[in-house]
Length: 368
Image (cartoon, rainbow, N blue to C red; front, side, top):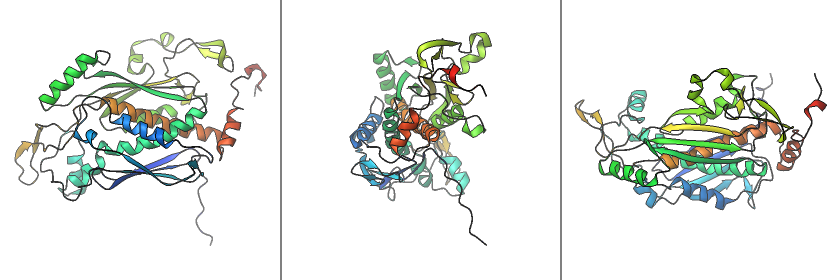
């Protein structure tokens, strides 16, 4: 009897991360990159630095270097079409000697993890559940960004608010963060993401998991502290009629195949597919769950009421969350683009991209 059949290769990108917050390093693997992409390691390092920017970051921002190493997948800085493996050394590697947390923190994975494992070792849970993992995804996202840029796709983010203070009022935001720090409290906020230059037809509708809107909503929701995500008009769409929601199609000489839209309330995605309009998302971040003065909790060893154990942390991470948001958006869009093009080399992908029909006349296409 012959061996088990291999599943056909699934086109697109796939990625995984590994490592603990205070372990030796974080590892990140990215598969599906085409052969021949020159990777700018300096740009990855710049992206990692931007993740530490912004007021409200904790002590780790002052000493963590995110030292980047390439372990596999490049030759002379160019992708080989094989898995790309990156390593980020941790500056604080005391995982085996750091103190245990006796009282779990509400809002973190502490208690659900204890209940899952039937073991009171909270550190064994928090070390991987920590947002430190997002540094690895940020590095991979910067690689995906470089791939997207070759095809004219640009991804950006904007912080809209810190708590209920508009981010445009920077003085008020700084004051709000300073007050929260003094009080041993934390703050959330809202950020938005935009991607321009995406060709139409990325994603899918044949299966529910193919739909790009679902994939983007889920990807942004994987960022620690994100508790709500919307595309385009989002929740506000519930208060308008269909006539005032859907984006009218118009002729436009500069549009894809001569067409465009009057508005973009759909956020650039219809029926699970990109429609050549800018992709827009917004996300809300809760206040992070580690507070200097703690939240009401229970000591797991005694069963008595206590305050949640304090673990070194930030006050506000909304700017960092926006940077990670760019990374996950880049990864999902690059994956959808490679799946659409299907080329094994960058040159093949570029040739196939040129045949997507951006300057075609739709009337010349077959009717059926």
